[in-house]
Structures are given as C-alpha cells and as structure tokens.
Image (cartoon, rainbow, N blue to C red; front, side, top):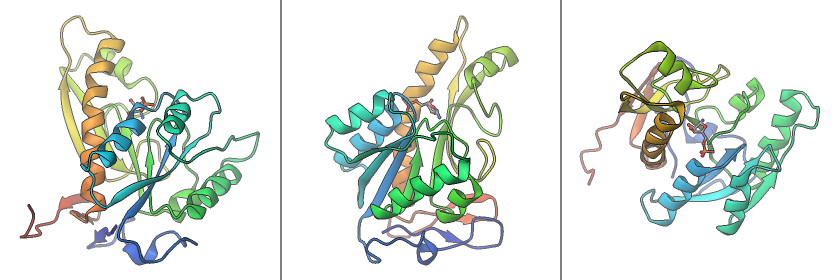
Length: 235
Ligand code: GRF
C-alpha cells in the first residue's frame, strides 16, 4: 500500500486516491514501482536487490524504462527478469515523450516512479500525472550542487563534505521536498571518480531506505518538509 499524507498546502498535497489515473487495479496491497534510467543503472539494481531481499516490503518492480537504447542498465534489468521498455525521445517535445512514458507506466499499474540516473527533466504533464509519487536520487547534498557534474562542483567549491539526496520531483532541476540525505566526507586527494564512488555506495543504501519509508506510509509531507510519521507500533 502506498500512502503519502500531506498536512498543509504546498505542492505536495494528495493521498493514494489522487494517484495517477491508473488503468491498473485500484486496490493493491503491493506498491508497483516503475524505475526510469538513462545509463548504467546501479541505483536501479540497488532497488531491485532491496525488493528481492525483503528490505522494501510490500513493493514490486513493475517496469524499468530507459530513454536510451544503449543504457547498460536495461540489459541488467532484463537479466534480472524484469519487464523493460525503451522509450526514446525521437525528436519529440518533452511532453510528447513524457506522455508515452506515463502511458507505459499506467499500463503496468505503476504507482511510484523512481528516477535512477534518468537524465531528463520531467514535463509538467508527467509531474502532474504522478504528483507526489516521483522520486529522484542526486549525488550531492541538495539544494547544494544540483545539475550536471555535482562532484566536480563540490571539489571546485572546496567544501569538506558532500553526500546524496533522495527527494520528491517537481518541474525544476533536482528540486522538490527532500526525503532523506546522507553525508559523505571529501578527503584529501579526492578526484571526481573517487568521490563519486564513495557517494554511490551510500546512494544505493539511501535510495532503498527512502523508498521503504514511502511504500510503507512512514512519512508525511508538510508544505515543503517531509516528516517521519509516529506510528506508535513501528518495529
Ligand atoms: C547516480 O549518481 C545518481 O545519483 C544520479 O545519476 C547517477 C546514476 O548512476 N542521478 P546509476 O545509473 O544509478 O549507476
């Protein structure tokens, strides 16, 4: 069951009832996750592993979509027996491309969309279709260092720590309420590659943890803040 409560206004209002107007089943005890990738897909695999290992109870991976046919991750997904789709932009507008992607997600009953190295900004149409049900992972402590080459930005800025962020997605670049973050130190002699590798390790853990919180209704969105719910009977 996927249920995200919103207490006050802001953009993150809604409940399970205003999920995308899915043509799939309306009552599900298992949240069907769609993962969008453009590249190697290591975060996608981390989510798949977490679901398989029972670290994200009540979830299943319904579909993996790539906008790039050559994305290595799509082959990994196939090898794991997952349903995959390639949906290329093919010169279409952002919204036209997103309409095809949203249609594929709906056809597969997807309730929660996880961007995992998906290198495209979403249109308003997509964000609205899956409002409050789209997550992204970014390898910096947002709102610092959004966009391309965050590790390069971090090293050039000379900061002592960086990290990774899982956040809800809105129409802006790496924008939207922050769900979870993990800090990673920058060490002497770090290169983009070494910092990237150290952060990627943490991304794989953090993304699964954040998805588990959402799938199992453990957070609520209050305006722009994401709060842990006090269930009282949490294990
Ligand atoms: C990750 O660093 C992710 O945070 C960023 O793009 C990279 C994708 O890597 N959005 P992978 O495809 O998941 O291995």
